[in-house]
Amino acid sequence: MKYLITTLALAFTIIVSAQNATEIVRKSELNVKGAQSTASLEIRTVRPTWERNMSVKTWSKGLDQNIILITSPARDKGTVFLKREKEIWNYVPTIERSVKLPPSMMMQSWMGTDFSNDDLVNESSTLNDYTHKIINEIEVEGLECWVVEFTPLPEAPVVWGKIINYISKEGFLQMKGEFYDEDGYLINTMQGFDIEELNGRTLPTRIRMTPAEEPGHFTEMVYKELNFDASLTDSFFSIQNMKRLR
Image (tube, rainbow, N blue to C red; front, side, top):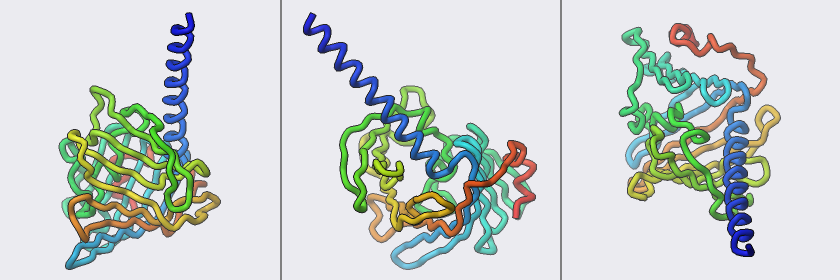
């Protein structure tokens, strides 16, 4: 009987821990996007011999609808990426055509940056396609964080073999993320800096993605504006609307 009680208690602890970890991830995702949001960002890609800058606008509704519009440089202006549930579309203004991106392109670089297509449009769901487990607690940029391990479900259409996310206990801020391939090798590290208040919400306003095996390479996204009071309809996130965005 004592063994049975101990086993049941351990099982209950594991279930509660998993539920708590998933809720932490859910809150951290909603903290970044909110129910509905719009944003303006500057993206800087740095290489040992050159640097490239880009400006973008984004619109999101929940975790399943998202649009990214490139506003500069001139050669890329008007390019649009649309996520609508599991579909990813790219509108290219030079050919006035919308193209659906296949899953095979999710690991490719997004617009020459160190972010992948999957990082920016999140084809895979960090909530639904992974299990979550708190494996440690650590301080990042002066904030106490839960260390949450993301393990993909067996049949999930994901690109990462494992993700380790560092989420602050205060405010559920995503302070750091480590992305591993199927063999357990670290591929990219994402880290948040410059915590400030934007539109009444405290967030890291500078996000840096650094490849593990390419010295001198990194890409930073800096929030310039962030609005959580947007009112967006489902029809806004349509293929037809992509070419009308400015």
